[in-house]
Length: 425
Image 1: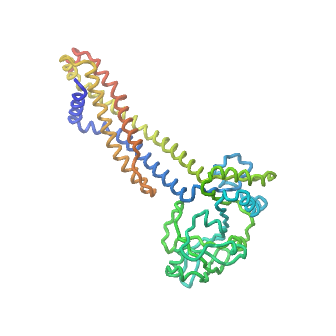
Image 2: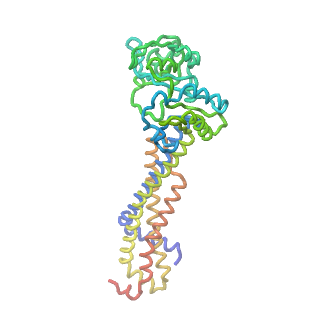
Image 3: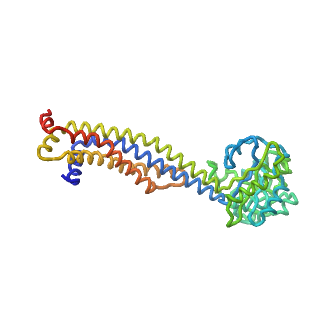
């Protein structure tokens, strides 16, 4: 009896016991669906995060103060965020920034500096727009890829003169100026912030793009957007120190951001050799993307292994049902052996039946897992289908489970004594 005949007999056996076959497949279906779904959602999440971080600029480098007492790597973002507030003397000074820019020259595209000036409302009579005021330098717009819609961006002369000018979002213009950007340019804007009320003149309008890391449910009218004012103006309004606890640097086109980050770190760290509390660390967005990739891959594998336990449970269920099937068909086995079937023929028949159960269950599981993964990754704004590798892995695992858990019952059937099998009631 060949493989084709074994497959035919296996399918007939499954048709004769449909409900039992479905219940046997259930563990395989759940296990495969869980693994495929998790891997797909993991791919979608990883792609979403990487795409978001790439939009921020793969050449972007974040330079921050780091406590010397914390013996951590430069890509330990949690430790950087947990750092206590530094003193004025510990901050990165404008002179350090200028020296760094001069030293690296054309290797740096821009340096972004910012200072929060509080949040509040921009008002015009009964009309309003929620804003978050930020003092920024000219390089900030390059580093953060702010897209200008009308007018101009802030310039060095605005910073030098501590001018009361601002660049607002198109959302604010929609709320206060009926969307007429040209009409908004040159207008006086009353802004009520935490520290008081101030009047700024609008010199530019930028296109608002919601950050992928912010999840606001506010309407277009109530959404809060950034209002950019000169850096020196912001520091004067809030009484902030001259220095910075972090700055953002963009490597020039063609430069390795990882290499530039390491060199910037080493350069600025020289200023902190005698500082007992702080030094400087620098991490490139490229490095962060690699770290996220590695973390997501490890997480997906770990969760998939846990989900794979259900496959083992399903495999045990397959073995149990196959043992029952062997017992029920003892006389049939005896008859076939009496008619000349060899041990290998009997063994092949039952292994094929086990494999078919697992493969059908695996196919159903892949379809369900693909649907769940697609829907799940779609909720993360990056709907993807399972990769070919994941599907091949699932089918291979199904085949392996079928062979592994089907061999023992099949071998038991193959070793039956034909005379004793024929006498079995």
